Length: 207
Image 1: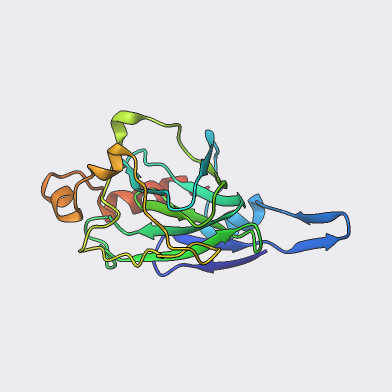
Image 2: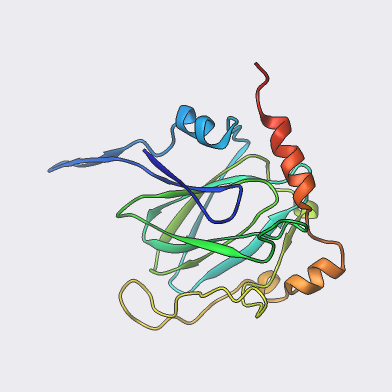
């Protein structure tokens, strides 16, 4: 498995080695030893979520209060999504910046984003199926959104799907009503960089 840190501190891309023959394909989608070596701690999975999206569905940008936050190991088992990690941690050197990875059923990459980071994705094909290994269970009172089309974030969302057809973005009512990054800062909604780093440090095993 190959691992690449993203340009946002606290996020990584994992690319598995695939073994194929006329029967199909086998791969190791998650390896705890590799994960711990690269990230610095193990991943305790408390909930596994799966979403299925039509082409053009845009989910995010979602994040959780820190602590406890909600780290995610994200994979696309069918179809394709353009997966985005946003640094919404107040005080971070890359605050307001983003990075993106194509997750699909060809390369079968995964993205891990640690606590305090924002996450969203755009489905590029009907039936795109995304699975998240989550460090904390869903808690609606601790989870929030930033609008994915916020001009200050300037995320370069794709405009065409995997088949080359133009995409029409579709949002949930909650995501459509999400505040801008500036509004979220002003309201004190966002996690801080220091709190996010402190939480991650607490997860490291002591010798």
